[in-house]
Length: 498
Image 1 (cartoon, rainbow, N blue to C red):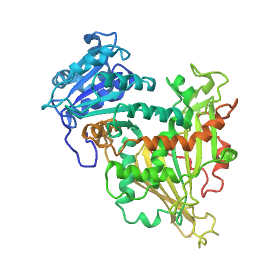
Image 2: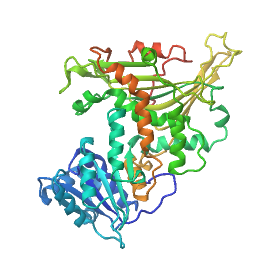
Image 3: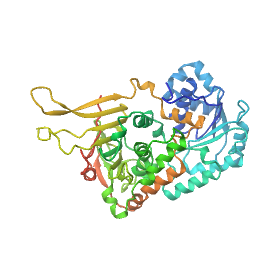
Image 4: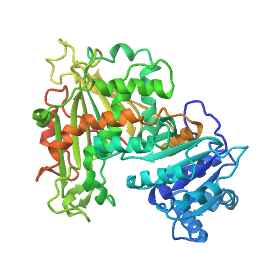
C-alpha cells in the first residue's frame, strides 16, 4: 500500500504515544495503520509505540492488541516474523489519565532515538479528557521541545459550539504552540478528497469554468445506509449538523471554493480556506427555515432489511428531536461565487451510501434541442469520494438511430484501478504529523469560524420538540426538494453503479 501521491518524506524516529490505546479507535484504525506504515517505511524502524494503559497487565494489553489485529489486519498476526517485529516496538505505561504520576512515568518511558526524544501524543479519548491530558503533559515537562519535537493530535469534535471551541483552543494553546497541535479530520485524509486540489489546480480546463458564470450550484453530500450503531449517546448530543456539516462537509466546501494558494504549504492552504469561511454569508434567525433542513429517520427498509426508527435505537429518548439528516444552503459572498448556492447535506439510513461533490453547470439560455422529446439535462461534474472514488462527467449525446433525440452520457474515471493502492486516511494523516505537515489539519481559526457560521442554526434547533421524519431507506424528504427547487436539476440523489 502506498501512502499518498505527494512526495513521501521520511519521518524521524519517534515515540508514538497513544492515550486511549485500548479503545475502539485504536483497535480499528490506529494500530492497523501503524503496522502498515511500519511495513512500507512510513514510520521509522526505530520508532516506539507507547500505550498508556489503565487497570490492565501488559499481557492483557498485548492480547487486546493481537485480537484487534486478527480482526482488522489479520495478515500481520499470521506472519509470525512481522508480528514479533511489531511487538518489539510496543511499550506499556500503566496509569490513570487523571493521575499526575502517570505522566511522570510516561516521561521516563520516552526512548532517546538518534539523540532526541521526539514524541507524538495521540488523544484517542473523549474530548472531555483533552484538558486533563495536556495539563498532565505540561506538568511532566512533555510539552517543551528542548530534547525533540512534541506534537499533539486530537480527534473531533473540536468543541460543541463556538464558546466551547474557543475554550478548548485556549486550553490547548496554553500548553502547546498552535503549530504543535494537529486537529485530525479523517475526511481530509482520504486521497480522493485531497485529489480535489489536484483536479482544481493541475488542470487548466477547469479554471475558466470554476465560477458563478458557468456553475449553477454545488452540492456536497454524505449519505449513509447505516444508522447510528453504537454512537447513540454521542449522537443525541450532536446530531447530523454538528457531526458532519460543521466539520467534514464545510472543510470540503473550502477546498472546492478556495483560491489557488501562493504555495503548497500548510499555512498558505489554510489561509485560503479561511478566506472562504470569512466570506460565507451569515444566516439570520428569520431565514433559517429557508436555508436549513433537518429530519430524522423513521422505520423502513434499507438494502432489503428492516430498519427501526431512530427513536427506537438503544439509549435514544423516545421523544428525541435530534436530526439524523441535515442540510444547509450557504452563499459565499466573493467575486467568484456570488449567487451560487452551496448545499451541504448529510443523512443516515438513506437509500444508498455515497459521499460526493456535485458541480451542476448552468443551462445555456438557448438550446437547439430543448424542444425535443427529451430535453438535454444540465451538465454535471461529480467528484465521488466513496464508494467507487473517482470523477464522473455527465454530458448529453444523441440517441442511436434515426433521431436527434438525446440522452445523458455518463463518463467515469476511477481514482485508482485497484482500491488496494489507496492508503487509509489515518496512514496519510499520521505520516503528516510525524513529518510536521499541517496542511490537512484544521487550524484554530478555521474551527472557530465554522462554529460561528452554524451557531444560529444550532440555537434555532436546540429547543424544538419535534422534527420531520423520513422513512429509512428512502429519499423521502420533501423539505429538501423545496430547498433545491430553484437549483438546476433539483436535489441530486446519488446513484452508485456497480
